[in-house]
Image (cartoon, rainbow, N blue to C red; front, side, top):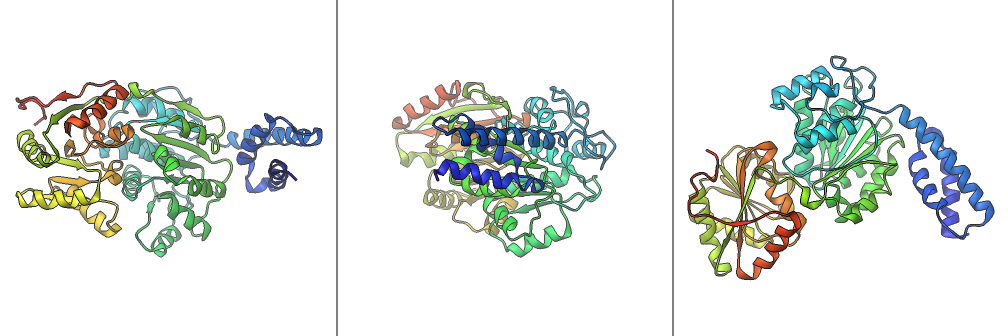
Length: 463
């Protein structure tokens, strides 16, 4: 039997388990199968029957989805959103308790991305959304999760996967804060670096939203600590990072264990073609809100460079820039962990209150560093790209690329640590002569101008 025939017969067996909700992955496999050539008549006939069956089941699944809910009816059965762009959160039909929490959290009106993307997500359809860091992406995910779930049910109903522990924790924290007035709502961060039994205890108490890293969530599913039967929504946050950096199999493992009717949403600042192609493995006819690279909004972030004579002069340039710009808080990115450690010692020696973060630190150390930085005890945070995504600190109004990132996509994530959600910020690149061509490639990729840092900086950063 050919490998393709094996897939077909495997699909047949799965279809017999209709009550367990397996239609989605059958549909994607069968749809691809129907377009293949060289099939014998009996196999093609089986494929066509399976495809028709899968379409029927998917239509039945979709009929029960759609997450726009009447305001003021906290645990009412969800109704569909129209999907039309909305200029206010009230127009989206969000629960009144959720709206109250959003106002208290400081969200008065949706960002441009949220105006278009959130209503589409609330229709219940699979969606691919491209959203730049700092445009309200995390709150979009949190709002969708809070709207989807029935808070009076203690079962997990929304799962968010993120590439880093910090981003997963941030999403869970935002969901808990926005949904504070939804009776019974709980959000839990399931991440590596802590004991699995801590997650098991939290899940046993009852939570509706789980935000975690792919490996830990998959482990909890396999151990039956996370019960998947009521999951309605799976969000892949920073999807390009996860799908292209070795998390694909873990994500697929999570996906296979969830009900076929679960909505899948991919969100990221960048969506390379290979990621869009890979998404076809997981999603059924997704609606797409995808921007070209040159359309990615970098509003609110003024970008500059300082030309240095060599690597040895970068330290002086950094200290001078921090003193002249008088930033509230600053994030400095380096390409190597050893350079982060070295630079931290140098800056502390110069009397600067700074902290360091990189992938070799354990979870407790990383949590401590972020707590200190958020509290303002450290003015400067030095980091590798492990935190190019997921740092969301309101006081950050300066990002310095001590080293230009190797990837053009990473540049966007790095500078997105400032200018968050409509605020102003500055990105400064320390470049040697040999770095200039790479910087020009970044300019061309995003259709932006990176100007030389001016001598007069009085009006550069907001007071």
